[in-house]
Image 1 (cartoon, rainbow, N blue to C red):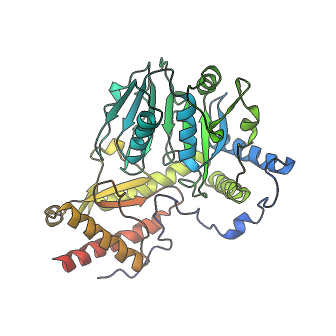
Image 2: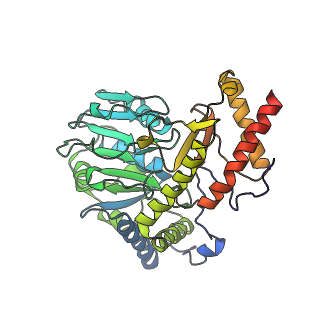
Image 3: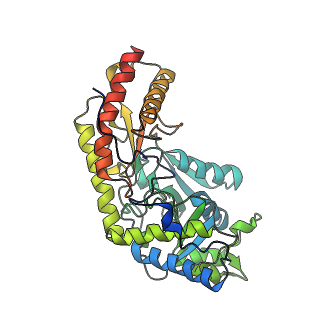
Length: 384
């Protein structure tokens, strides 16, 4: 039977992610639009955003925050182009974004002493292969594979290289060991449900030291230039930006941070995320046609939850037929306004991807599950 109750909010996209509960355009009415970000008022709210971010995340002493253009991609590119080169590099690849960083490092920067340590979708590479004398580049949470590193135990306390971590779909929802991470990047559009196109770099003192002691041999575009007269431009730590930011997006980020404080800060955001992941886990356990793409429980993402269809009939289809089947499911759910944007990433195995970050309500997920069952059976009957 077709379910009678739809999710109050059917937005389960993995990016941009749904806004915080209760969000309306009125949240932006205090935005400093039409004013310079370099004005006294503009600088004040950027400082406020940096300070709130540090407090919510509980960053160690000496860690600094820089806002960048071009979302998490811009933040990661800035780190890669500005810091890599003096040491060998290990790149961990188990999904599309890690693969993208590997391509940048080998094909664009053309670094030669690079090891790519890989695993297929649904699995994690052997973290024990990482050399503490090398720089290491990795995603904390594989947004397109539903696989995350379980912890920071594999990162050596005596490491000599930098740890450069793309944490965009993990930060604010998972407990990151910042003391072991030298560069952490993210966008505002994931766990906090902010607007896109702005990125954030969190830099440890070791990362700042690399920036000030090493000069790349290749030209750096203006957007990547963080160093001035041999030192990281101190204005960047106060919220200054290299190019003109959106004050409207900044106001939205501040609104998201205030909401994060209202639900208990980082601990509250993690609790909300884990409750959502637990609800999905309970449904998967009771549903014979679906399973997690990630085989091991300890490496399963709690935000970008990737699912595979394990029905025997479905597995007997050719891959092009499996992708077409999932496409029909996704379109049917969108037409019914039960779920938007839940198809697996195009390079991942055919299946579903449901965002379960902190801005998603558990009640909406619970309302979604009967629709998933209905859509699967409906399309299966149609195809058979």
